[in-house]
View 1 (cartoon, rainbow, N blue to C red):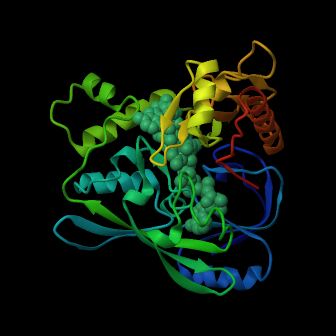
View 2 (view 1 turned 120 degrees about the vertical axis):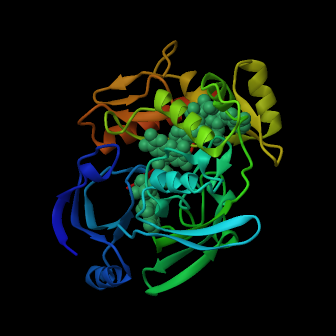
Length: 342
Ligand code: FAD
Ligand code: NAP
């Protein structure tokens, strides 16, 4: 295990932001993690996976630890499910493909989400009508102060919409070591969300399979989302906000094309992308495709802020502030950042 000093984090975050960490180290097992905890003592620590959901706005005057714990293990099965454990450092999409190749169902709608397994519970990752919590069984996490490993059930994780206990109450307290999943032997397909059905038709799929659903999701995502290897970004910068039915009715009357989906609790989830597209830096100009220096709003998906090369985290953050303020001033709706800002 190598400890590096004053290292650039540019290659460790998909925004491609150039900031420096005072100390940087990767760990591959519990022994290395325990040694790092001794070394860091009471210094601040940020644990990183693939760096696809972070925005660095300043140098890190402490430690950055890259979680490289690997391994996929089949734990057992019952009549309906297979139980599988994956190390936090496993690449998420590779894990999804591994499950699909064994005909274990449940992860196909979550194909091609960047990042690693260990970060998936952090915000209960979700896409195309499926959330991590639906396939989650348990996880093991190391408490940095107590230096003990704890097991978390789904109930302990307090999963919400792009939320968990690790992003809120227990922020910065635990290192997630591995995640166990409960995958179906017989698939339950979710194809009504977004453009999946349309894409399956385009692919001429007559007999549905988890592989086909995964490929449809991959095709849609590849056509819509900026590739971080080409243009720096961290996916959706904001969450979709929920408002009361009454507030939604008022907005719908004023803006008939506004996009909203009713939640199970009766509130309405607004498409933040629509709100951003229909507000802007000045009267008559929308945010979509807007660019200020090297920081911008993606021209195909207004929810995604981008770094065209050389933007600072501060510049991206300032742009997010302007977007947030203009959406509030036009629609009276407060957006919340999804990306973890440091
Ligand atoms: P990182 O960015 O490395 O970390 C994210 C947060 O988790 C940080 O606060 C970090 O400290 C913490 N963390 C990471 N690993 C650990 C660990 N082992 N223990 C404790 N804390 C940890 N997200 C979705 O939900 N749905 C999508 O469809 C989606 N699409 C995306 C598309 C693109 C193009 C991009 C760039 C991002 C997208 N994202 C999406 C966001 C992101 O990919 C996910 O949130 C992903 O789970 C982040 O994984 P990561 O390993 O990169 O996490
Ligand atoms: P989209 O299909 O254009 O839809 C726009 C928004 O409407 C999405 O944010 C989605 O909410 C919502 N939506 C669409 N159909 C819905 C339905 N049937 N019921 C409820 N809500 C519905 O979205 P997109 O931008 O191409 O993204 C597709 C999927 O990938 C979405 O699930 C999105 O969350 C996910 N994604 C996430 C990130 C990220 O960084 N978090 C980045 C890219 C894509 P939800 O977002 O709640 O699903």
